[in-house]
Length: 316
Image (cartoon, rainbow, N blue to C red; front, side):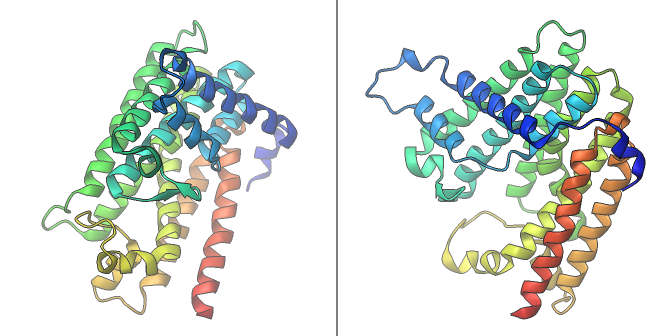
C-alpha cells in the first residue's frame, strides 16, 4: 500500500464504533417509524425487520460508507445517511435472496422467511428498500441529492439484473467463467460500490466514481471466489440434498471442475481471486483523500482468508 494513503486522517476505531451505533439506530428508526399503526398482537413486518437487524452482520457497506464519507470531508450526519442507505439495501437483498434460494438460516438464526413466512419476508425486504431512500434523503438539502437518489436506483437495478441472471440458466454458448464474473460484478459489486460512490458524488468528486465502481466489482469477484472455495463441498451436495432444487447454483470451483480442470480448479480459482484483488487495490489506492483506504484494508484481509482457505483444503 503506497505511503501517501496514510497521510489522510482516519476515524479511530472507537469513533467508528460509535458511528456504527448511529447507523444501527437510524435503520431501526426508519423500519419502525410506522409500527404503531399495527396491533400489539401483530408480529408483522416491523417485528421481522427488528429481528433481522438484531442478528448483526459485518456491516461492510456501512463501514465503507462511513470511512469514505469522513475521508472526503462530509459531515457525520451525511456519513451516517450514506452508510444506512447502503446497509439497508444490502439487508433487503439478503432477505429476498434467502426467500428465493430457500436458505433456512442467516447469520446463525432462522432467516426471515423461515421465521415469519414468505409473505412477511417479501414485505420486510420491500420495507428495507424504501427505508434506504429515506436514509439518504435525510442528509438534507444537498445540491447533489437528486443525482444521489438516481444513482441508488441505478445500482439497485444493476443488482436486480445480476440476481435474475444468477437464478436463470446461463445463455447458450456463453463462456461459463465469463458468465460467473458478470454475475458477481453486478449482483454483489453494485451495492458494495454504492457507499463509496455516494460519498464521492456528495463531496464533489464524481469523476472518481468509475474507479470506485471498478474497484468494488473486482473485490466482489474475489469475495465470491473465496466463498465458493469455502462452500465447494456444500454446493456440490446441494442437488443431492434437494436444497435449492430448481435453482441453478454458481460455484466457480465446480464450474472449473465441470470443464475438465478437476485437479487445477482450486489453484485457478485462487489465482483469479488474487488477480481481481490486485485490480481492486490499484483503483482503490487512487481514490481521492484516502476514500479507498477501508477497501484496501478489506483487500488485505481477503488475501489472508484466501491463504487460510487453501491451507485448510490442502490439509484435508
